[in-house]
Every structure is written in C-alpha cells, then in structure tokens.
Length: 294
Image (cartoon, rainbow, N blue to C red; front, side):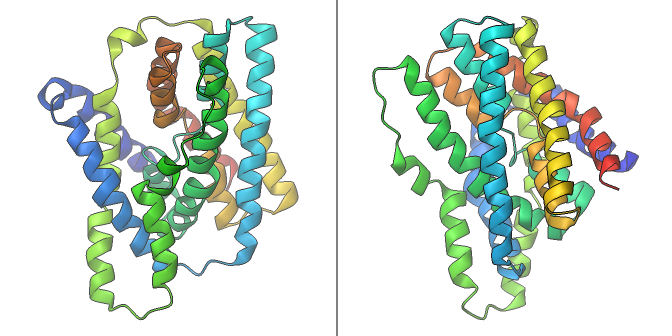
C-alpha cells in the first residue's frame, strides 16, 4: 500500500514542482485528458464490464448521499459558521461534490484495481457529474439573476457522450487489439490527472486559510464517507461495487465544483483552498478508508 501512496504522491508533487514550466500548457494537458484519455479509458472498461442493473441502486445511493451532504453542509455553514450567502454557497459546493474523476480514478485504479475502476467510471458520470451540473447549477443560481440549468453542457460533455457510446458498442463484436489500444491510451489518465491537479494548485491562495476550509474537508472527507461506509455495509454489504462507490464518495472536493464557484464570482479562495488542501489531505484519509474496507 505504501508503494501505491508514494506513486500517487510523486505524480502530484511533480505537478507542483514543475508548475512554472507547464503553466502555459496545463489547460491543453487537461483538454487531452477530457477529450482523449478519459474517453479511451471509458471505452476500454465499459465494453468489457458486465454491468448488472442492480448497480442502479449505487447510483441512487450516490444521489442520496450528495443531497444529504448538501443539507448537512448548509446547516454547518449557516448556523455553525454563520457564513454570508456567497461563502455559504461556495462552502456547500466544495463540501458536497467529490473529485471522482481526476483524483478518484487514480486512487480507485491504484488501490482497488481495474474492475473497480469500471464501476467508478459509471458512478462518476451518473452519480457525480450529473448532480454537480444540475443540483450544483441550481444552488449557484440563488446568487444569480439567471436561474437556468444549461442542459447542453451535460449532454455534450465528452466523457458522458463516450459513456453512452460505450454502452451501444456492447452490442457489437470489437477486436481485442482495438480495445488494447484504448486501454493503453486510457492508462495516461492517472499520471496526467494527478500531475495536472498538482500543477493547478495556487499556493498563494492557499495561504488564506479560513475555518470554512477546515470544516469543508472534515465534512467531505471524513464525516460523509464514514456515514456512507456504515450505510453501504448495512444496505449492500462490502463488495467490489461498494468499495468503488465509497472511494468515490471519500474523494476531496471537486475541481469542477470550484470552477463553477469561481465562474459564479463567489468565494474563490474558499473553493481553491478546499480543493488544494483536500488533495493533500487525501494522501492520509484514503489509505485509512482502504483499511476500513478490508
């Protein structure tokens, strides 16, 4: 397990170390992940994965946990921290939505293996991406005159489109050599994603630590995953699907959620700080949850 943690940490650290070298190219690197690496990974895993309709219960569970996390973070932000509206909405966004792709995929693949990664991909698209672009957009609309949810962004997001395409491909026979090509390209997700997250962190903003960042990480990475672990054991038992789901839930705050906060011109320091410290904190929390699943 130590080797796994060191592998992920090294990739993340290299991103931090080479920030200035890649600052002009990091967006292109992220685009490569979104348009090439992630779609290839999705095709190679979904085509070979035997998905039972029973996995729908895990997707429903993910939506329930997200809504529960929103409710809990609302109570903590409004009544415990007494945050103003712009900070409250930012606090809810980073406390409720997890970084299930850029950070989640590398952790799941490294600790749980390829089969679990297939389930993580499904969970990420249907129980993480969809909630943040629907419920998240709705939450942010409370601070905006425009209260519309952009459905076009949901249905034109490349990994989501490829996920649907991969399900359709299961009706056809595809030569293994093609799948192996997609698998090799998909293997670039882990190094590129962790490197990109490290390269994107702005430590000048992380210096502005506030109490809400601390509470957001406690909620997102300790309390909610512990409650989820208990519920998963009680409702479904511990199996490869529930392990993948718990890992996804236990991930640090979502990068996309923080971007949405910044675009809405809310509390950017809170959003960036939670994401940055969350990634660092995950090197401690994820191995603990891995042990709890044994």
